[in-house]
Amino acid sequence: MTMTGISAGIALGARSFLAVTRRLAGVVFAVLKKQKTSTLAVGGIATFFSALLLGVTLFGSSEPGGAPTVLKINAGSPVQMAAPGSGTSLIATNGSVISDPALIEISTDGPLPRISRDGRKAMDVYARAFDANDPRPKIALIVSGLGLSASMTQAAVDHLPPGITFAFTPYGVSLQGAVSTARANGHEVLIEVPLEPYDYPDSDPGQNTLLTGTAAVDNPARLQWVMSRFTGYAGLINAQGSKFLASEPDVRAMMQVAATRGLYFVDSGQSDQSLAREAAGVVGTSFVRGDLQVDRMPSMSAIEAELARLEVLAQQRGTALGVASVYPVTLNRVIVWANGLEQKGITLVPVSALAATKRSIATPRPAPAPRRPVAPATPHSPAPEPGPHP
Image (cartoon, rainbow, N blue to C red; front, side, top):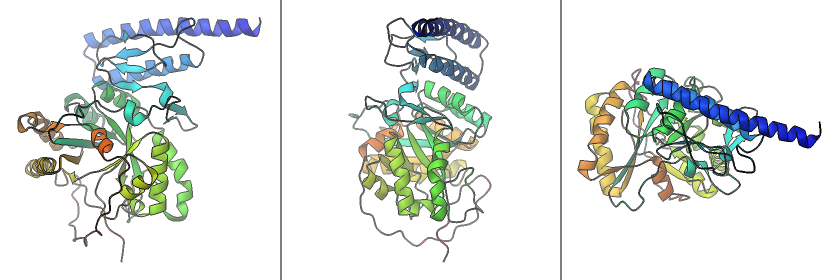
């Protein structure tokens, strides 16, 4: 058989396989809907079919002489096909892009974000839409720590309003399924990057933590591993990192990677010595810094007080960013709080809405105030990160 015949046979086989996969996906999701299967389970199966479809694109178009098709999906609903597009993408029926192969680079560790050939970036494609002309005060809220507890992750995905931004740890199980489901529900997603705190390794953020000093030569490989855990995220957010974020060359190198790969960066705001804003401004990375950790004291009254402070900040400055953890009490309070924002004349926006307004801005700031002694944290309360040892 000639090479032309072999190529044609592969393409024909790929097209036939894709057609069968589409039909099978539709049947499976119809059954899942009738049986009321959990959204995370649906997300996992959606990820499986996405991988199959992505593999098919390596052999050719889904239609003879045409472009690959776009697969539309809504968690718990049958698959619907969209008009042909420029790549085989997984798109929710609400318009959220779950996966776009044009934004994926395959590495030895797994899929990495990249800027597409036509200039599209993950921070834009995977961002939740918002009305930039809305004059009301804007609040963005990140719920972090998702992916470690399957039950708490599913509770967040099932019950939090889509305006809340999710930050997933790189250490969970079945992360891609959970992330895909969150994207299908309209949430913007971040990935947490473990960074060295001052008391490392007594306080260890996790595997492949980015380090300062001589160990920094390993940081590119460590960061690549972290970023390859799943796809569909628009930006990075630090997990701890008081020492790392105070090391200018190290944080600048991380910001360069974020910019090169089309991502924005969120500084959680827990370190007074952080140089992340300055480094982002030098490199040109889209950046935003958190204003409050709303559940540092994980009690109902304390969380409500911090959320009220977040509202005051937004009314005074126009925007505010809060960071929270995936605690049961936090989810309960955030659901009630978010449902009441419209009546207060405040709009809930994704983090990208704030990062876009502060892109590449490095404003001078005063030296950090002396740190006050901090009481030991409770098992469910993240304490402020310690400063440098005297």
